[in-house]
Image 1: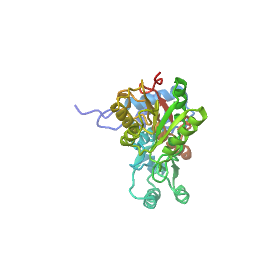
Image 2: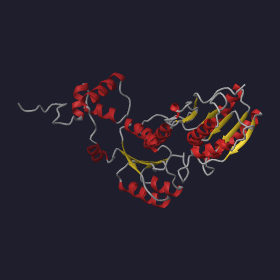
Image 3: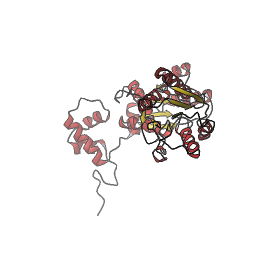
Image 4: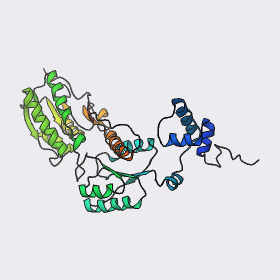
Length: 339
């Protein structure tokens, strides 16, 4: 017996007409649904969505591009040295896919000039409708690109891909200190990050401002470089009779160094010392004690940027979520000070 040539057969890729027959609508209605033009009755949308899922239907992007002169493709440029690039890309790609676009991921070596030339080549090729860049571009470059395609540049990084904007928001440091002060802590120490990073400078600034505004005592700001070694060195430098009751580390790796050195000195956490980090790394819940940290919604950085690009393309994607990206995650390493 020969194989059936009907919809859903492994020998034939389902078409828009197959979806239309199964959903009991016209193929024009299915096309309208796929373009996200809106205006369809909820029941009609539900039937089409069910038919698309049942048939595992995927639009023929090549045929659509030949018919509409639109490629249905977006390019995302994301340098490998960016903060959590995979998570940002995941957020951006998810929004693009929901809007019916395919995403091409680009990553170029070299500085601004090399990056600019490659992006201009992509824009001039006509292969993509829009470009989302997580690397900064000069205003003249953006103007040249925007004549060819829609372009969005995420404003979360400087030219060295160091966090600025929402990623560098240090307000959770104030929340941490305020809560610890409410528990009774009065003596604090901050182990800073590398000073060339805006995020490190912001966390130090908020630390100093909050300590001053609450009338607390600071034992200073220990220099750091984002490594556990700098956290351990800061603890080793503390005089035994001049101990803080809380150490605010610039990131989770610095905090692990603090915990290691404090434990080696016989200080019990959190009974004698509270330690907090930043970044909410995957290992923080499994430290002993588990580490209080600050989680950053990096996926939302990507999804918000993609929504801005889709808005410029006239595609429905919803408004960006402007809620704060950072949230304190309280765990065992923070508690009341010793009596």
